[in-house]
Image (cartoon, rainbow, N blue to C red; front, top):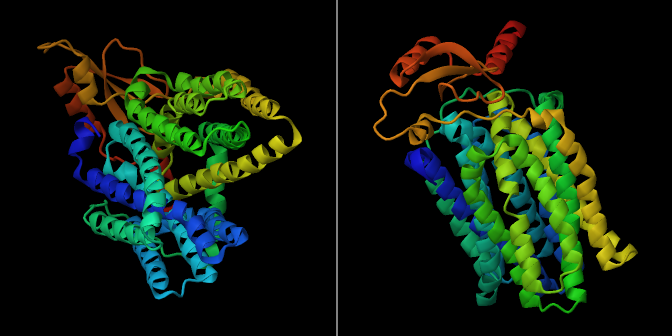
Length: 482
């Protein structure tokens, strides 16, 4: 967290609360199947409990997005943290009392899954109201780093905590969610009017959200890209893990492989704010596909766990930049009243792909030799890389103007004569831009040029309604309809 974003008190509290929450969640989720095996000795029961969390998250995804858009988002986030703390604490009590059962664990797993389905769109929808537009990409990248760090640290700690005591990972999880609840309660989220609608209308609201996602070319194309990439990369990951076991790679090295993938993701997320400013959106998105197309086949010829781990780390470096570019544009393009459904729809689509990927990978390993399975996954990624490269939509993907702080950094020291011009985008949002610089895609010159103070005064005069144009039109349409 750097620059002006580090001074944003609300965002710091939100980030800190979720760093705690995600650590506890990942620690308990890695311990869950091991706990079920220890209590019941049944691999089927272990799979049932773990699968319940994933199924509950996917099943609740689309309704959760609609609920987020019609309700108080901070209350939803607080409710999710409270529900997870209570569920984890109930499991701790059952384990200490010697009455833990599979049905109880299934219920706890379902609570975790539904809470995750609700929290993610609530947080993503709140983010543009906590940070200015020019800081949004950095906030998105820092959230990605937080998630990768929570997954890496929580997963590593979960097994150790379980060795200390069966109840310990879940006690830590309960405390983490309770602490997150307390921290989150101090976040001041701008008030928005909740829309108490009949429950019967939720299906229509979900359909409205899906139409919005499908009806906007930038969103539609990037979602399809993410789905295909998630499908083949998650298949590739399982194929490589299975092959590593067949090649006799020690389990410790396999753990290092997984950890290096997470470490690469953290480093990539930390680099993302810098790369977003240096690379065009098209290059950051297409570059991920070309990098994975080139790197994926190498796994068929590498039999060292450490080298595969290094390969994983390199592969994980660029996706956070592309994700930051895409998500920032999606959040800014989408009206506030649809952001929950946007995030939910994308989460369900990519979640289905990530769930189907391991099934595809397992089938490939059974049907063909290991090296061929790797190459088939690489071929799947390569097959979509060509249309991504040629896509006119991605070539014209808009680039966000830089903040005034970033513009100042580009100026020569003590240069008080720098000239600026005012830009306006298709959503009637304004920004300052150094005069003479190439205008980013999606932005247009307003015809006003002068010093920073003169341009800022002009923006203050003409930008009297901060709502994006699409949101104003939607609200005006709703007012006419009622």
